[in-house]
Picture (cartoon, one colour):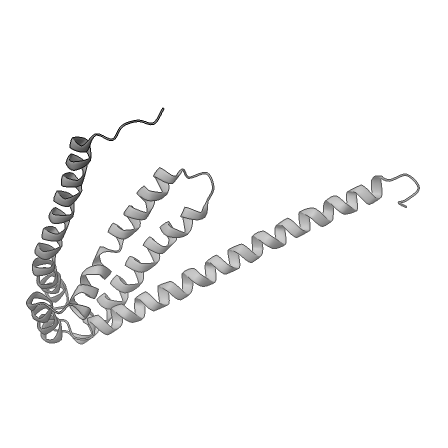
Length: 178
């Protein structure tokens, strides 16, 4: 027997979803106004206007905060993780990449905080943005190489195991062997 739809329950769910969307939107607005300027100031404090420091810190942040989250994401393909744990690991990877998200919000952002962040990085952290991008690209390339190499090695191990099994079967058959 089909269950009846309770209109009050449906309206409450719709209202909850709309409130949730509004809260997320407001948080995104606040984050967009705060984090680019804040992050640029943190980087500027570390670099202190030195181009060598800007490049080194950029390479560090770009590489480390790309490779670690990507290695976490690569683990999601393992079958022993439930879907709940895969979701948690994905969330952890997104959080671990926060410095890159902050830098990206400065580079592609259109708001006044992003423009202020660009000016701060131009003056007090020269070379940071480009070096961060180079570090991130290098990390992505390394993860791709490691993942492809690991998959090929796994395939080869499976092929060797299968061939050893076939060889063992052939040696066990009567009338064959040495």
